[in-house]
Image (tube, rainbow, N blue to C red; front, side, top):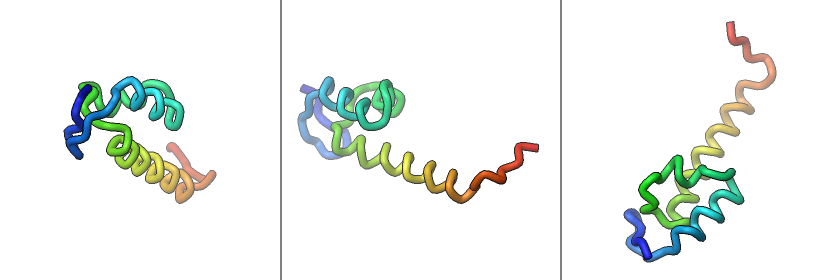
Length: 68
């Protein structure tokens, strides 16, 4: 079993990939951690922050965004 590079806990890589994929979309875990060296708990902290920031930016931009 791999050991998380952030918290030092052992984790099951396939479980982490599957659970993150269910929440954030297939392949997201591998995009963030191609080496598979981060547990689900630590990965969720980083990925959820990115998703929350993206949602906030979309909300602030509203529907009047002009690409020109």
